[in-house]
Length: 102
Image 1 (cartoon, rainbow, N blue to C red):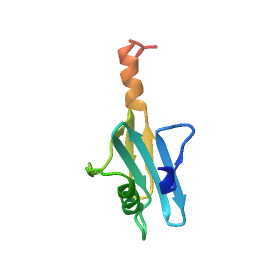
Image 2 (cartoon, rainbow, N blue to C red; image 1 turned 90 degrees about the vertical axis):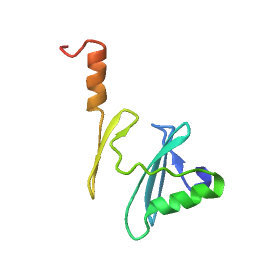
Image 3 (cartoon, helix red, strand yellow; image 1 turned 180 degrees about the vertical axis):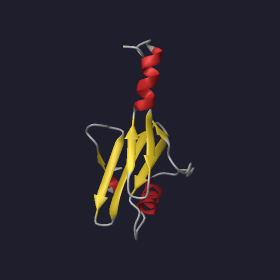
Image 4 (cartoon, one colour; image 1 turned 30 degrees about the horizontal axis):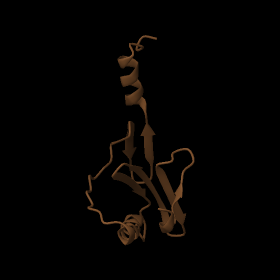
């Protein structure tokens, strides 16, 4: 990832970030899967990311379309915004440990 211009996030070691004059890309990696969020504009960053990745790795792309869950997070997005929430995960944990009335 470093050779493609990405930096590892200190707060999330399996997440990488790249920003330059053409846009931004965030990649969350888990074992052999990755989820990518990119800016959309004149030069869609997703194509650049895929091209960079193909230079170093052989992979099969599987586009699952609109992301709704990611590592316990609920994800919602519009044309100009993204919302991340852990509300569902918190609710599940409260029920699991019988703390829903605490």
